Image: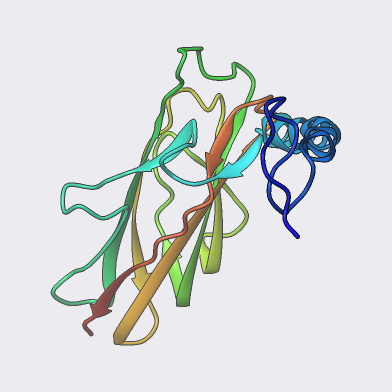
Amino acid sequence: MSRTRGTTGTEHSGGLPRRALLKGVAWTLPAIAVVAAAPVAAATGTVPNDEANYYWDAESVGTYTKVEAAQSGLSGTFSTQISYRANPWTNPPADATLQVIVTFTQDVTIVPPAGWTLVGSATGQTFVFQRTPAGFGGALSFNFTGTVAGPVTATPTMSLINGGSATWSSLSEPGSAVLVA
């Protein structure tokens, strides 16, 4: 036997009674509100490139990382561009340090770039560059010499030290070239 809706509007055919449904919604809403608020509290750190305060800005060829080989000498150039944005606008964090780590697939020797501090050796596969203050980001470009002719890939990652609530891109896009002896 099925119930039919009466004139009071409190009965319906099958399913949950309206009061039980409303009671369930009332208990669920606070839990949904807590879950929805969690990402706001976790707004510092790495986020997708299109949401980050500090983000990889496309090079002229439409990529974020560019590695170009010279015509000879096992040498090449690495370049990338980091920019800053905020909506609503706030100035970049005054005492923050922008850090970029570039990892190559073979040992290389680099010529440290102007405007950035190289932390560690100029020879190896992994290089740490810092810029203080982080400001509006900027170009990171340097020459390198490899050890073996053939393909070489460089992959940068970024982070922000003492950046407060500012965010940075989690994107890590490699660039590749073929070194010629």
